Image (cartoon, rainbow, N blue to C red; front, side, top):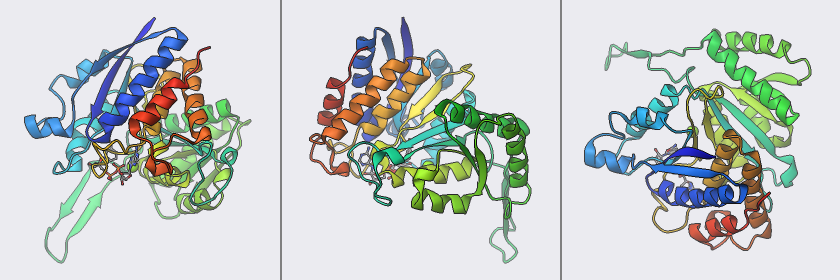
Length: 353
Ligand code: NAI
Ligand code: MG
């Protein structure tokens, strides 16, 4: 059997780490007896500077023919970030109803959390971020610009369907992990949207009497993630809160070089998109300094999503084994190896069934 994978390496280190992830995936597929059929798309900010578009007119239709999308990162000096966001990433997330942004955060073997300094086993959380509505809305505007009476309105939009489905996803995930759900709220300050969010949370929670759950104001939760990250399991959060908490969580376990993420359409009606948390890192691009682990763990999430759980676990085990051994590490995690050397070490450590 085979899967059709759309690969969008993007810009900068996106290209470098995606090349490594692809080779690791091919090795895992070979070992586990399935095939990956790749289509590569050069959609990027670099392409935008040549053509004025991030992707061609029929880009979304072409992606729709695939089982999953592996994306590097987009971003290029001189191209404003909103171009890549609204010209590529947001159209893909919205067209394919990727309403879950999933960011597992785990302290990897041999790495030390800069904040907590705790053992690996203690730190294992997942941020479930609402990815389709909420605070990131285009509704609003500026009034009386430039005058002393200027004011700005930025609306949030929360739908019952949207809030319900993301919270339900978090409870299902907690059941799978044998964990607990914490809902990020701020109903003392945001007096319309967050009380509604809390109400839907309580309704959904009533259907999962076996899953421990609580709600926590997002500011207090941020502090807890720094001070007692071992007491956090599945966090469900709105688009804005989830965006902030997931970068915080990545920092708590030692940085962007190892943080994977997925934009998921859980119903599998459309392809999901897998991309590391980090960007294109122009400051280190083209020098072999990028850590490929984030993108390789992202690729493992893609295998899980495709139903190839044994292969996904083999990739994660390979990452763990290489990091535990510690001799091949990129500079961001205290070593001197190149992107390609770490990628190869991981690829060679992928085992079969
Ligand atoms: P960034 O994540 O690219 O880099 C932040 C810092 O972390 C840099 O010092 C970089 O060298 C380091 N870093 C990131 N990934 C690393 C890795 N794998 N190994 C070692 N070090 C790593 O964020 P920044 O600098 O804010 O953005 C750069 C560009 O990337 C911008 O154009 C931005 O819009 C874009 N970006 C794109 C994203 C995407 O495509 N999903 C996400 C975030 C940023
Ligand atoms: Mg972010």
